[in-house]
Length: 158
Image (cartoon, rainbow, N blue to C red; front, side, top):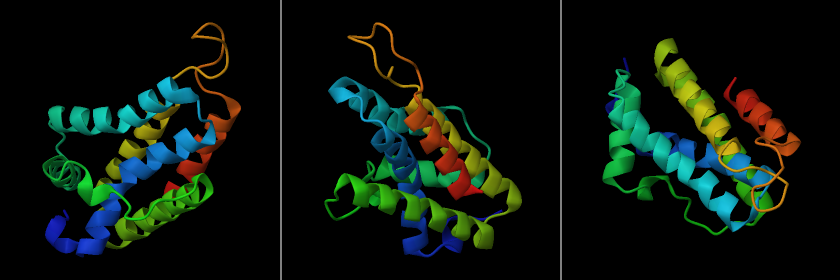
């Protein structure tokens, strides 16, 4: 089992950014107005709270979630302002880094649990708001752009 002490501060910050960056990849794939944007961005917060309340037994996730909660997400926020394209590229680079960090420092079980958690966040973000339609009438739960973003997240975490 790995713990926070097994990671450099930079690696730990990268792991802490991962849930936010995962949600960002999906959100940027198909912006759906202010209501959809808020719903999709709140998914990450709900996922963190839900994971902490579910009494996850994975020590890596438990420790990371506690740090994110204790810093109110500040550990996880990128310092610079980004364009949408640069934000997407930064988010994708973060997930590639997460995969590399986990491959070198986490147990296979920890890595799998962490990646499953991130894929769940991506799926929840994609399903947070209907796409298309008018005032919630019609539209689809997950559109093609979001499906592509979900596939991209899975690819980055492979």
